[in-house]
Image (cartoon, rainbow, N blue to C red; front, side, top):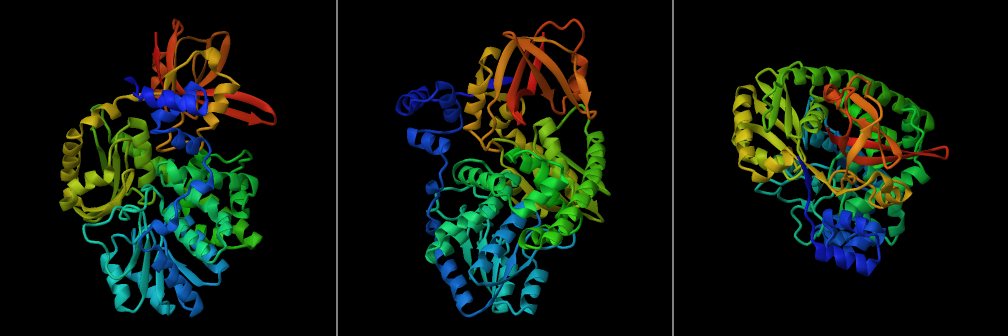
Length: 556
């Protein structure tokens, strides 16, 4: 079902008149939640001056003072990070930012399989062996009540920087920076690296060197896009400027990663998701995330080359394992697809189940959890869809779980093998209570209907004003009806299709990702097709091309 999402025509009229902008871009803004001309101006011109004051976090002043005290007294600090891209970039950002102002800093990241997510006793004991008196968490800690209590019993202070949902009882005797629990902090969707960046903002602002925080902003772009938090508000500002830094003043580590991937174009948000992010994530998935952290914190070019080469090899290993698990997962799904997909098996690599759940979500437009069974327990990850909260669904099922955490769009969990079937039933029962979900899973939101004659530089430039696009700020989706199919589809990499369509004397290539199963709908008698699509523009050595990325189509 194709659905035109409603919008407030009064807000639209006011934005068009006050900003004197094209009505089409105003429609796109209003459909993305913009409610005033001021918000529209900030959206179209995401300047760093629109960032919120870091001291709106209630514990920011105390956290900054504690770190500056550590500097003055030459205390040892340990950054306790996480093994995904968000945690890796946040950890690397704090290490570089802290060392720049003279702090004595080390780091610890748990092993994904041996220790699992979050603070661990092993990590705290590591800090004790280093004789550290302060731990700063990145992308974790908000549910580490017992671990923080243990650290405090050893005389180690803790500053938590996190963006995940808290438990009913917050950790005690520590400082916490988390927008979800700070009523005064206006933006709630920062990634873990974004919260870490706000801490650096607070320190550098106090030291009157605020302008120098800009050199770390590329870390925020990488971690924010990879963690699938909404690209709105502060996230949009940080990602836009981070991408500019990556492309205009490329850090050596990212340049080498690009070279390894044989990628020569400008990096956009989707390239973080599909090129840089997977290589960084491969470290924690297949071996240890410290490989990626070391890549970012070293200035030795030879070491950077060596570490990037290692990540490339691990990424190839990850892709092979991921494809195996994904293929086996597809075999577990019959024609009666559940509203909430929960799959489990022995032998599925724990490091790739999160990617597989993401691919299932993309393919079926349903939330999905994929579990790796090990003995009498299983560990896994889940991915969600728009207008549906994974973490709320897990709250509903918490009596079945040994541990869980995450946020609206992604989660991790641990469960007894014997409870998996009950979890499937519980989650699908929960889904059936969500009336909005029935609309979301079966429909595609269309921004507007346009004619082929409208596709050109103007609409491409309009789309670019909305970048970076991604979760929470999707690329615009258009509908054009009655197009002529100029060529039958060719198959790309065994799972995608490509064909040509014509309308208004214009012809464009259409790419249908993961649309191989629609191939049978085409035949030589096809006359017309309606297509729902987004627009991809390319500029290679001065040659500009436009492709249509098909979301859906109806053959007539």
